[in-house]
Length: 262
Image (tube, rainbow, N blue to C red):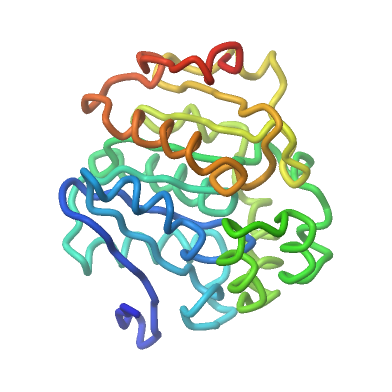
């Protein structure tokens, strides 16, 4: 286990591979650990980092650090401490919100951004995320398969206050405006059967700028990277392999993405 001390608190992280840095940010359910297959796929050509956010996994539990703003500061402090330069961000749920805001504020430090299950309004977030325990949410959102074991194991480690306070602090975030505020190429991914985060409607998607591309993965849920790891990782690697600054709309789409792209 790797750890760094920030603000006199333990922050747990892991890293794989060599090359340009890729930073994975986890959801409200689980921890860094469910990113392992994605990190392994990316590590063939990139240096993949993943950490546990404040209140999750093996990082310190301190309610004073559970707001969205404090989690963004954690990413900033961690990348600075590790000497990480321009980075690709991959965020999921909570990590998607953090990644989008971080990219908007640090445009010179973010090369590209892939976000999964990004909420576009508070009403798009299922109330169960606020009402259920981390273990109950894992039972709801994760099917029992070998791919989900890591997320199941680490979900109960989360401080329930970390979920509640981060969700409450979303009231201060313009969720609908997030895709318009970052200048980096951005790939928005949504599981077509995600019960936790409602997908954006077609009218909203029509307004997205050229640098932003949206893909709905049919028949997949809130954890598409665990539902069909091979398919998701092919998309991930294709996106990471684009030339710097190139719009994800230029992806050479494989047959499985056709008719799923808007």
